[in-house]
Length: 98
Image (cartoon, rainbow, N blue to C red; front, top):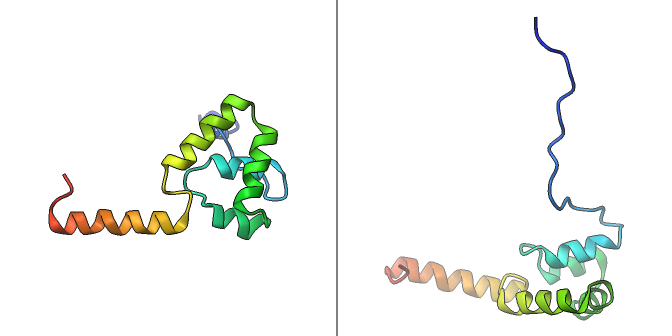
């Protein structure tokens, strides 16, 4: 006889909040794969607005860490991301990558 019971729900460490929730902007700003252009399209906040929101919402040390991370990652800006992707693929084709 099989055991009957409920199936546990898998919990994600940082689940995505609702897009109407103000916390979604903070979540999206921390996420590496969400660009500032996507944030602006979904919420209407520009990059400078997102920076202001993050400055208000985070502790000073967390804000500095986030800014350092955003400036180092080319993924947060679509143009930089596409350029770096083209650069990597051209290096792979030439055989210069690794």
